[in-house]
Image 1 (cartoon, one colour):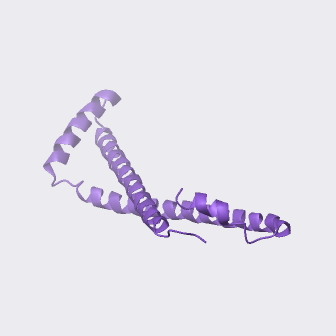
Image 2 (cartoon, rainbow, N blue to C red):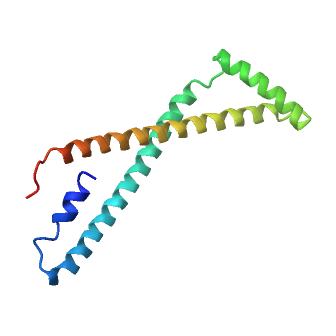
Image 3 (cartoon, helix red, strand yellow):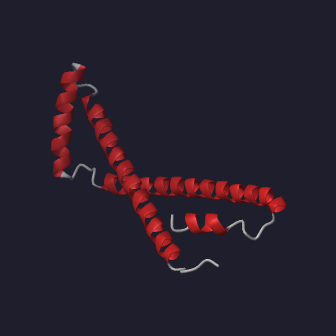
Length: 135
């Protein structure tokens, strides 16, 4: 709002009525390009951070982790009861742990995206608050 209100009031003062339509179209084209760039940037950031978080979380999922061993034993027991057999209980437990790791990585990546948006908003607000007069 720091930028939109003053600029909306002053952006077309320099143009005649004949040039207004062309200027307004150009403004819409630039706006669409900015929205597309912002969307694609956030998608790239989110995917990159998801891969990073998944890698870091997956490092702690190994057979030397005692908490994971206990969790695997419990999940295998539950899977054996649910599937009425023990032949695939280990694979089911591994799949469930992988799903949890993937969900946590996705959550952390989205959280990083919100932090990025907050930083951009704060930076934009500070820059927009600097000018005292537009004319």
